[in-house]
Structure formats: C-alpha cells, structure tokens
Length: 76
Image (cartoon, rainbow, N blue to C red; front, side, top):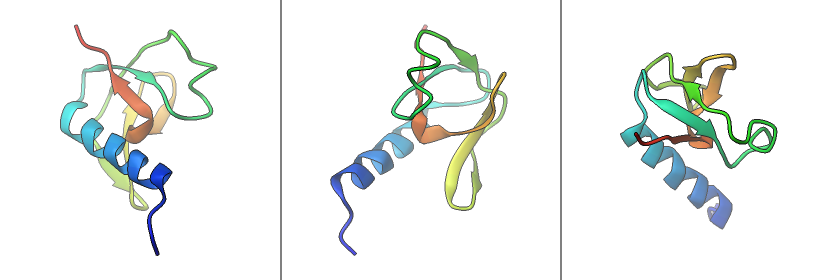
C-alpha cells in the first residue's frame, strides 16, 4: 500500500501535535468536519495524549475525547 498525500499530511500533523500538546494547553479544532462549527473557539486539554484503536487522542473540555491530529495548540 502506498500512502496517499492526505494520509502523510495527517500523520505529520499528529506527530507535531504529540510533540507539542500537553494537559492544560489551549487548543483549537482544525482539519476536520467540526472545524468550521467551532471556528474561533478554544478548548482546554484535560489529559495527556493516549491511543484508542491506533488513533492518538486527548480529552478536551466540552467535547470529550478528540483526535489530536485535528487540534492545534494556541500559543500564549
């Protein structure tokens, strides 16, 4: 199987998020269907990253468990 461009981009976003997002950080939702609905909103990360069925996730306020590859850390 040859990975698609979209798959490689998602993997890169996930690896970057794993290196930067930690419990207590503020994040915004990006690169998924819910990004438009929650545009401009930020969420607090309530857990350290963990895996569910091969997907890296964190718990965020008001949303529960969320794919870390669809989150972007807010600096400052």
